[in-house]
Image 1 (cartoon, rainbow, N blue to C red):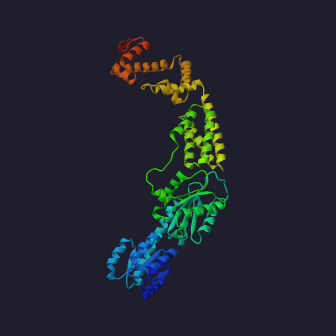
Image 2 (cartoon, rainbow, N blue to C red):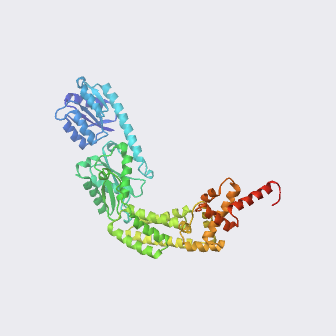
Image 3 (spheres, rainbow, N blue to C red):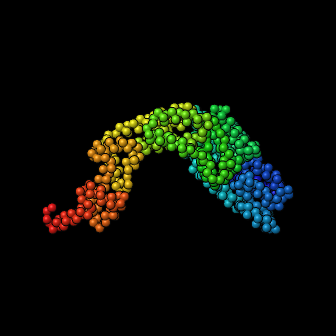
Length: 512
């Protein structure tokens, strides 16, 4: 059933339209009437109205001004204009105000029924579209998003309520309990609470009429936060005192969620006026200082477990006093995950997934102190994994390094580069290479390059010696020739001549 407000200064015409509407078998109810625009605005602020039928020429406030003011209160309000033939210019202006249709005086039953049927069709489509869009946000396990008829077409304010991190878990943290306490606060205005796909986050829709109670969005949101806090439910809440356009509900919700992600703090609930953030330009994100982040990364790479532990305890204590943003804490843990995973095994993606899974429960701790203890214990286990990684057999290390070096024969590779790649010391690499090749790293790596040069001379005979030297990253052709003779006993020219003689004999069937 849709609510109708009729505004007409002529009482006979007003009674006629009301009587005709009542006689039609349509889901329409005349909830109020008015004889001028000022009284009509009061009714719009007091009642949920879906359809406004208004005259153009009226005392105190004409129909066009009423429509402009009404659209500010209720952007989705459907308006049907009553006009005479002499009011055509007014009618044309009204159509620019997105008036749905108009009725010519005197209003006939057939004309009224035809316009009302089309208006109902549009309101039905609007209701369906709004419900479908909200179902994109509301957790499907809760069931289909439902709004009662009275609430469907009312201007609605959108708030987001999220559980405060490191707050004790309570049975009260559910949509039914939140619905009870928020309905109590906002009564007599309608309020609906829906769980979203974001864990511990709820979508709150409140009848836009509450804007007449609170002077600022902060006052409204802080009242809600305190009301819930008294019940032992600690939250961060955000919103704006501007009705959300139904066609943009999902977009608005996701923008609000992003702001909430960036600005929620680890201690004490907070309120966020999203209207302030929407008006800001550029990035407002704060990040952990690079120097600070690098220090923890270097301690992990250097296996400095005790130093890491002392520094982490100090930093966690500092963050507690600063009431750091939750997003910064999440970024820091993500940095630790990335670094530990990279150092333990760059090639094994399962390691990173395992570290993510093991760290996830940290943010569900009931206090920041529990989180801090949990992070220290988690870090301890990560260092134990690093130690196990270092105990890998020398044969396994050599196989991995040998494969990596052979893939980089056409690059100027140093032992420091290999050490950085595998996160172990250059001296340890030297010992491994010496054990399995009986050569130093330079001799081993250079030998691989010379072997590759021999293959190029055999398979790419058109290549010049300088081209081979450059391809294998030797400093110059003279140095290449000198090293080549040291390793093969021949100069590149002598080696190629011997290669051609051998190939010639093979072609003639002479056994070499």
